[in-house]
Structures are given as C-alpha cells and as structure tokens.
Length: 339
Ligand code: KG4
Ligand code: ZN
Image 1 (cartoon, rainbow, N blue to C red):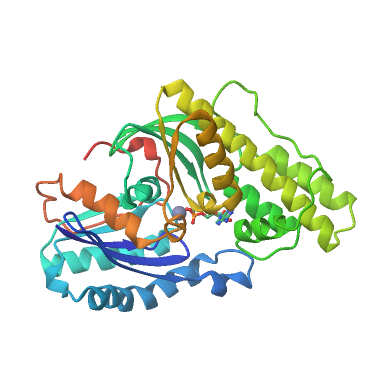
Image 2 (cartoon, rainbow, N blue to C red):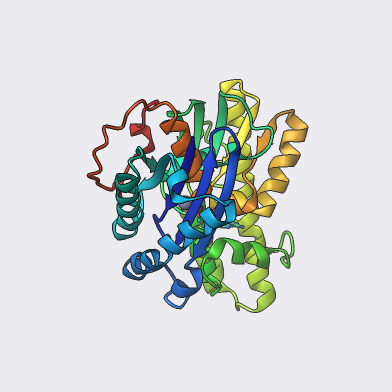
C-alpha cells in the first residue's frame, strides 16, 4: 500500500511516500525556521500561511522524485495533532480533500506516535517490545512500547521538557532559535568543571524528570557572570552534561525495570550528539542496544507520519469514506489504541 504522509503541526511542512512493501520511497521538507527566527519562536499565523504555500508543491515534488502519479496513492496519513490548530488544519484539509478525490482511506496520525516510530524506518529495527525515550520540544517521556498503539508511560517530566530546557537556556545565553542545536554547538567549546549545575531527580528512584530547576540554575549563572563567549560556552557545556546525564541514567533504569534490551530514542533532542555519545557508551557498558532515527528524522518530518499512518492504515479495513475532519491541538498519546 502506497501511503502519502503530510506533517504540518508546527513549523515544518513534511511530505513523504511510504510503501508497506518497499519502505520509504521519497520525502521532502520545508523548514520555516528562518521565517520565525526573527521573532525568536514560532508565530502560529505565519506558520499556517506558509504551510498553505508549501504543501501542494511538496506533494508534487515527492511524486515526481518517485516517478509516481497522484492516482498511485492508496492511502493518506496526516498529522491530526497535537500542534498548532491552524497549521494542523492545512495538512488535514488537504489530506481529506485529496482522499475524497482519489477515493482512498485516510488516517489522522498522532504527531508523537510519528516521532516514536521514526527509528523503525531505519535498517535492523528492533522487534517489539522495547523502551522508547521521546525527547522533543514539548515532551520528555519514557515508554514501554508493546506494539503499535500500545504505549505504557513509564516516566514523564514533572515540568519542562528537555528540548524546552535547551531552548530556554539558548535564550538566556542569547543564542539563536531553535536553541537545541545552538547550545549543543557552543558546548563543544566549553571547558569541563568550570561550573556545576544540578542533575535534578537523578536519584529519585523513579523514571520521572524535572528540568525547571536546571533552567533556574542557568538563569542564576547567567545573571552572576559576565557573559563573554567562553563563559557562555562553559555554561552550555555544563548544561548539556546535566541534561544528558539524567536522560542516560533514566533510560538505563527503564531498561532494567522492564527487563528489556532495546531502547529507541526519538524527537528533536535525539539529534543531540552528546546524548548519542553518552547513550552509546552506556549501551556498550550495560549490554543493551540503542536505535535512533537518522538525524533529519529526529525533528519533524513527513516520513514518520507516512510510516505511522501506514502501520495503522494497513490494519484498517474501511475508514468509512467520511472525509469530514477535526484536528486535536491537544491530544494525549495515552488515548491511542491499537489499530
Ligand atoms: O521533535 P521536535 O522537532 O519538535 C517537537 O515536536 O517538539 O523537537 C524540537 C526540539 C527543540 O526544543 C530543539 O531545540 C530540540 O528539539 N533540538 C535539540 C537538537 N536539535 C533539536 N536539542 C538538543 N540538541 C540538538 N542537536
Ligand atoms: Zn515534533
């Protein structure tokens, strides 16, 4: 089954074609990062308008790249939520209108399920069950994944998400948006042991996280030091060490607690080099396996939506052919059920 995937939940228009026999066939992305950069964050109205401009040309592009026609599409997956409602409505309405014309089934995909399953697009994907660490701008969660749609929450952040902490730290250090890559790049110049930041909840005994204390500690450091380039790099370094140490430790604990041997990492922060370095070292030490999406599929993309949608569509005998739609700007992953 050839599935068209459409992602438009935030500031990236992502389109892809995934075939249940052949795998990923084509994908294309337009990032709005530059457009929003001058505002220091995503402007929802601008985001929606840009999705409108990009979505159809990108669909045409993936079809051309794959040497396929619109009429080859057998199902359409789109991000139904969570995300910005205006942005979600663009992808959703295009998907449903196209599906109506082509007379093919649709599936509204949960954005986080897309992220969660993205590592399965790579070679040698792990078999179910496994533990998933979902680290994005809005989420820091550990889950036990028994199969598609069966996600048991093992741990969550009590306050800020890891990506949010990166973004806020970047703002305090006067770095560019989005903050994660900027902090990570600056940290490479940082000197070890100049500053010490808290590893919140490292020894809490559970699998939960907290990053708001770390953010406050960065604020205190930023206010009490002259922010010359080296000092900024030293703060970025220690901040990244603090976040990654806690993430790695909780992942290892989650594997121990569940008795599982495979970990998948997904979401924007999963692109962090230092996190991957530390997780790989821990995996070697403790004898578990870690699976990541390729870097471009850590952040928002159409491939993960096409894939998650394909997994659901292939189990869906009939979607009823009713192309009315709603979006879910707020949507708890725990509400999902098996396809
Ligand atoms: O998954 P994503 O693209 O969007 C959400 O659904 O939230 O994640 C975006 C988040 C942002 O907070 C961004 O700063 C962070 O991922 N991020 C990174 C890196 N690349 C993106 N954080 C740390 N290191 C990176 N290399
Ligand atoms: Zn995302």
